Every structure is written in structure tokens, then in C-alpha cells.
Image (cartoon, rainbow, N blue to C red; front, side, top):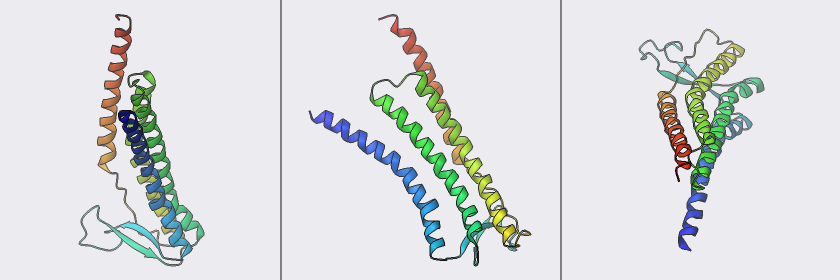
Length: 189
């Protein structure tokens, strides 16, 4: 009796933790910038330090510039990278929950979970790259609209996406082998 309750508690805790990630990202990437916009605080734009005029800056170093007088279009464009990130996190969380749900039902090895893990691996690899480029384009649009287009912004692509995506792809391959083994073993019993 207690074991079933513990299983249920574990399930809720796991799904709650997975759901908390996109919710926290939405708060930080969408709600807080919108709140700063409503309070008419300056728009923050990250720029390449050397392009912004710091000659002694290390290559790849970024500085955050606060821009006063940014209009609604600049603010909306600034929210786009966060929106893309939240959509990617939500999709990843949905895929993870679907895999975990099948694992908890004692059906981990199946073609569906293998496909989900491969999609998650692709998402983990592609999402940071897409978000980085969307952020760069958004920063360039904002800088151009504010007549600061001579200042460049760089692209920082985090390595964590590639590493975690490759690990998830390896896990997907292990699930594919497990699926084949399960299918082969079904006829033997």
C-alpha cells in the first residue's frame, strides 16, 4: 500500500519538476521582460564588447547596454528569442514526460520512445543554435531601429546543447537496441 503511494508521489514529483522548467523559463524569458516593459525600464541588449568600443576586451566577450526610448516594436522583437526558447523547452519537456510515462508503465523499449528520444536529441542540438541566431537577428533589428547598426552583436552557441543532444541520441540508440531485443525475445517465451 505504501509502495503504491510512493510510486504516485514519485510520479507527481517527477512530472512537477519537468513542468517547472518551461514555466520558470517563461517567467524569466517572457514575463519579466514584459514587466520591465510595462514599468518603462530601459531595454537591455547584449553586444560584442569589441564592437561596442572596448579595445581591451577578450574576443567573444559581451557587454549589456541599456537602451532608453525603445518602442513597442523593439520590445516585441526582443521577446522573440525568449519565446523560441520557451517553445523548445516546452516541446522537450513534453517529449521527456511522454518517455517517462511509458517507462513508469513498464514499457520503456518501443519504437515510439526511440522516436521521442531521437526527436529530443535533435531538439537539444538544434534549439540552442536556433535561439542564438534568432537572438542575433533580434539584436540587429533593435540596433538598426535605434540607429546603432554600426555596433555588431556576436553569436554565442552554447556547447551544452551539443553534448546533451549527443548523450540523448546515444540513449535513443540504446532504446532502439532494447526494442529489437524485446521483439526478438517475445517469441521465445
